[in-house]
Amino acid sequence: MGKTNKILIIQYAETKGYPTAIQAAELMAIRGYEVRIFCIKGTRKFESSERIKLDYLGSEINKSLINFWKYPLFIFKTMMKGILYNPDLIIGIDFRSTLPVFLLSSVLSKPSMYYCMDLELKKKNTTFLRNILISINRKLVSRFNIMVFPHKERADIFKKIAGINKTILIVYNATSKLHPGLKAEDREYSLSNFNFKHVLFRHGAISDNQSIRETIESLRYLSDDIGLILAGYMKDDYRELLNRFIHEKNLQHRVVLIDTISRKVIFSLLKEVDIGIAICRPDIDINNRLYSTGSVKLGEFIAAGIPAVVNDTNEMRKLNKKVGAFVFANPYSPESIASAIKEVINNPQKAKKLRQNARKAFETFYNFEYQFEPVLREIERWIGK
Image (tube, rainbow, N blue to C red; front, side, top):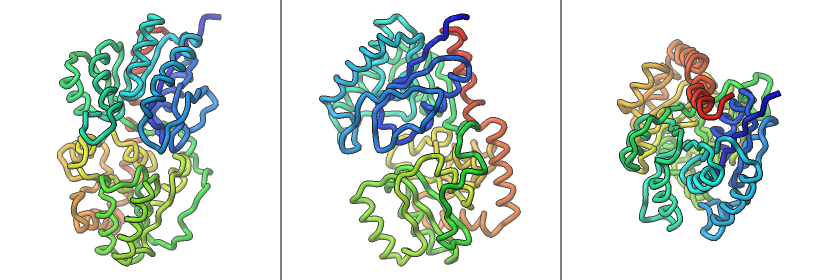
């Protein structure tokens, strides 16, 4: 019996239940690779997987970026454990993992892969360590053998910033067909207690850069039987601010705040949702301006077969020519958001068509298996089956 090739994934970013690393690891394991993940405990643990061994190196403090004194400790643990594991391929998820992946791949003389989620830029109002790690990332990333981004425009900008001229594979942040939450029998939670005739749903980190207050205020232009569910992590001070805003608008009976929940539970809730809210303020962050295929929540709305309200941009309209499941809104305008919602709710036939289109997109190309296949072929080219 031949040797089983081993793959190590390193993710120092706060996990927040992000599905990408686990989904990639699952598909690699199915192909016959032995896969292990070195990760950091954040606000949420990784979704569990029987096929993948998770090795927690430690935890972050105060749900923020890695503390300066902890980063060298994580690198030391990564090097010791990584040398003992002796993988055939080392994968780094996001810029915080660039340095340990580079060091480990250099020591072991093994190929490496950089898998980027967001396009990270230096900022003045952030930690000193973060900007250092971004600088290190720019210097070392050209040494990686395989590079993956979820969004073409982000990849093109990154190539210019880092001064590299190599192929970057594009893998949409889509949902895997293997996701346990997609099973019809999984109904851990129910929204029926809220007595909404129509349910709007927004999940993920909840903050103003997601046009949250504009979405809440859009309810004033919609009938009283329409309710909004906001599910995800939010800072305590922002939760207080949001609750005051909701009461000031007299919408406390139509907005429900749910704490951080697993992605399996998210899919359980999406079975009762009419419209997904996937708008964001493009002035806050470059990833908000270029989000389309990089958005995890958008991929989950498509997988669940529900229409989504998205930013009215050329980028999103271009993507919708392939997906056919979006309605468009100005993220700064509650009236525009309400108008997009009415476009679905007041037109049952259109709503049905949008749902059908979403399901078709998921079955044919907007799923992680389809998107990740070119990466699997590239991995096979470097380390074999």
